[in-house]
Length: 70
Image (cartoon, rainbow, N blue to C red):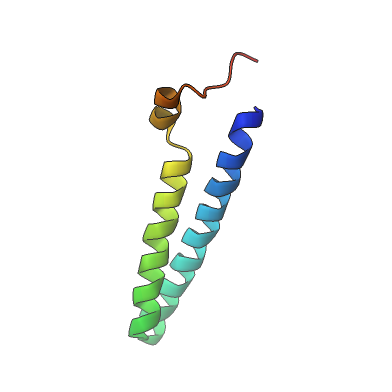
C-alpha cells in the first residue's frame, strides 16, 4: 500500500483542481465573465487529466510497481 500513497495524493490534488475549475466555470457562466469561464474550463480539464493519469491502472501494470497481495 505504501507505493500507492503518493499517487493518491496527486489524484486528490487533481480532484481539488477539478472542483475549483467547476466552480469558476459555473460562476463565469452565471455572471457572464468570459475570462473566468475560460480559466475555469482549463482548470477543469487539467484536474481531470491529473486525476486520470495518477490513477491509471495500465501505467501501473506496465511499470511493474503493483503492490503484492495483502
